[in-house]
Length: 427
Ligand code: HAM
View 1 (tube, rainbow, N blue to C red):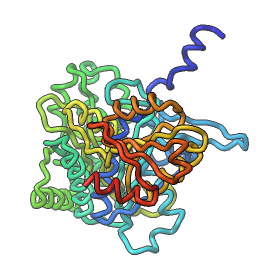
View 2: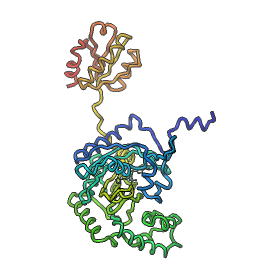
View 3: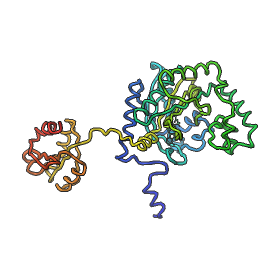
View 4: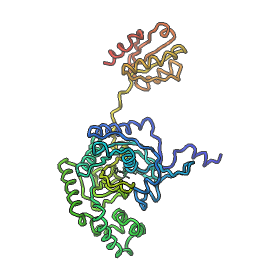
């Protein structure tokens, strides 16, 4: 095998990574906290497949978005179908809502989800090709309170994980009518500046003018600052909706910043869009983002269904927790190490480990190791308080040795009395 090929065999695909045991506690902390708060606010779990028909995304995310143009992992099935690894979760959930007739349930339907998403991006800090999201969707509710619930739950999760202070950047993209008037004026404005804008902006001007406001090039900065702003074009109902969103943010004490240049990279949004950042001078990538998507159902061939949602980028939150040296609380760590000596003891091991599990006593062990020395060494390396030693004699006598790892004192205890004995010692 060629050297390069052999090397590739031993590497995760570019932009994708393993979650190792020592890092899992961070992911678990994020998911546990997120699930706890989301459930408290009435969200229910939903899981959709990792693969969806490619058309679901091309129809809903927008043909000229980066995701659809460049970033989808697609495949042809043996039956000739076209599937895509999901790049995001909102379109699949709306698909599921429609497919399962969830409009007949009490509205709104409030859902949470988690899992891997895939985008063929240029990997860099905080940007991966496979990444985890925790997302929330409220479907079937037109009122601004749903924006507040989504943003409040996302900010609570981030704050309680300790990655605050956070700030919510918020904007309104209006509805079909007022946005199209705005787009016309934006295009007219930029058409007069074509000599002064970057290459990407020239393309955006043709394909997706709202994304002009997303340009980070210094060259385009001043032009962007002076560009017409969506807020000035909002129709009265959109203006009223946005005003109510902001008022309810105020009364919920959600820290926000009106960001006239916030447009987002997905076409399905209407009215409110938001991105949540760590609140500090140098802005990093968004920790979470989302918005309202009242027209998404229509792009899938149904009538409009009012909806709003948002998702947290879990890797970004985990990285920030690590940077801030936030160590999540470990689940109860075992204090007991189980040691077996000889074949008969090995066979009895699982029974004893199970007995301890039923008594809620977490236990570490090394079933593969046979020597007493090796197992004791491991127990002491893991800082265990007690070792339980099951040898030939103990196996025959239905007993076990309980050894205090600090003092090296030990006693023999009947198996029937083991749970009580250990519980007393750990009190
Ligand atoms: P999004 O802004 O594309 O929105 O992604 C949501 C969050 O996922 C981002 O704020 C970021 O933290 C994280 N994220 C996105 N791309 C990457 C990446 N390549 N690597 C690491 N993290 C990433 C959505 O996906 C929408 N579905 C959110 C939504 C829900 N809107 C309404 N409901």
